[in-house]
Length: 308
Image (cartoon, rainbow, N blue to C red):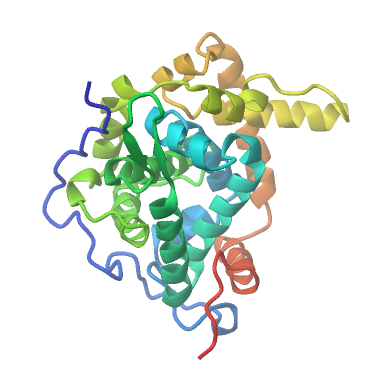
């Protein structure tokens, strides 16, 4: 059985971004004291800066992590070479820091982060003791699934919790993120959707080879069966946010995780999560949100570049 992702539909003319993401940069000036040597690969006029600085992107990132975990081959590699399932919180923190650095950091720090992750993937090699099959984390089709799941999760979160995007802005974000794919080592453009419609089709087309492995089940245990201890208000908010995240998953993924029978609960939780997300951004402009992430990247990048 073919266990590699279905390639993305062939994007239309102009859908593939060249190095430096020329579609991303706009004329909006930023505070130079808050940035590194340059605006990085996206810039203040990009949809990427707008989305990844918004609180909703963090929820979309968790949904993406769940989707990524349904790649059974990658999970076998990570289970055999790392503490993936036992360190879910640490992985989420490192992934968030990596994304912040590649999106908001200058090009030197973005490249350094990408090179570090490429080395990590290249070193993650596991041989099945029963079959002798060698599985590699740097298999490009699997990297593409990981990348496209992030783009999909962030867009689904924007759909559900804001900010509101036009179809053109959604398509632009998909293309901007081709640069993020290049940074992590994806070179085959056929694996990268060129529009939101193509992205949705890519996610759906790959459902037949996805599976819930034991490491993936362990990773998602708290989301599927959350704890009910502690401050009642905080528990209520956490439960709604957790179910709001689960509502972002496609129906087939919810079926694999065993949560497909809660549509009314998930829809209600999504409405509450939208209100909570709006409260999180209340009183802060997109410029304020971007500045907050940019400051964090400057003080704590994924991989610091040494001064020459």
